[in-house]
Image 1 (spheres, one colour):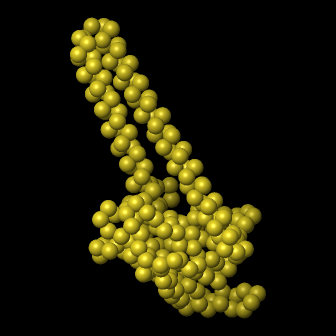
Image 2 (cartoon, helix red, strand yellow; image 1 turned 60 degrees about the vertical axis):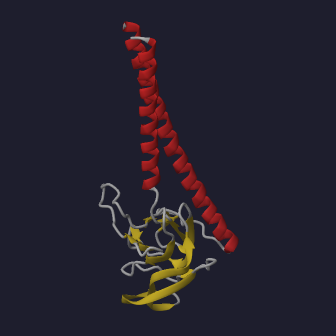
Length: 239
């Protein structure tokens, strides 16, 4: 094989490797661009905790202007409070429970079923965190799904409402899911500073997971490049 052909083959191998890397990284970014809840798990029956709903904007030409999160009423959260978010107005809707819940403080007949944030906006390439405090989580289920609707300035609404089947792949528009585990309760924030700490911890966890995923992708791409280079050199030597 001539030197010119060798260089051409190497350029093609490099181009293929770059395109593969771009596709993998794009897929990784798309997989994380949905509404999520943090932390990802809490102990069953945990008390005085905080949930953060992270809403990213995945549209290039429109802003997110409305966020709706629906709380389950078959396994209700008790004592729900919404943390104020600058620029946004929160509307809390309660529903009468089919089965009242008896507590040490009395019988509870109503629970929050929906929280709607309006008035603000999330621009392209940005996200917003919405904090919700609770008094107590249920202890009679293994997970809670919080279906969500995300409305954009162009009128489009994305419905994050699909729940993954046991052992199945993640659906296209997954609902935020909180796992409930047996064991010690997750430490809860005592004040606003504690809430910030919880959010920072969630951010750190997300960043670590994304970093490991990207690192794995880079290693795989480098492997492809090395294999392509070796193949070209082998063909050149035989020629």
